[in-house]
Length: 194
Image (cartoon, rainbow, N blue to C red; front, top):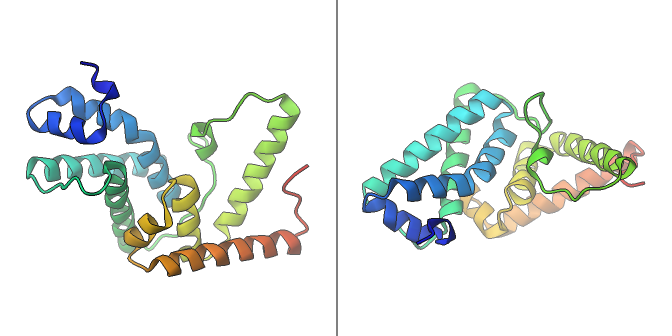
């Protein structure tokens, strides 16, 4: 049986009866997305790695105690854990996040981009950079929704549950984020496309 083709629920069931390999597959399947969402909040490679480890330790503990229910999807559950750990970190440190690349990591390195000619790629990179700067200038609540929606690929329902607000509030924050970003583009006379 090829475990890599199994769904998350089956992998969890196999892990709970002692198949350690199934958890490795689960970890590998979701690690990049979870790490990326953490990194976008903490903006520190080492800290993101530490929080990622905490996320998977918490997942293992919850699974072993039999407290995980299969009602929700595994990835959304893991993302909620990572989000809560990031919030805990910021409460402790009172630091502000920035969405910007570092020497060791850039969100766009893990996104699939088809091969383009060099000029098209340069324009894309400049556009991504400008968009990241705009996202970084948003108020915290709006930036959070943009990151969760576009970088962590979460639905508004999932974002609402994760951030403990109504769906309408999450949608409103996204709407205001887009309005603010458009306003910043106009005020700074930015060109996002060629």
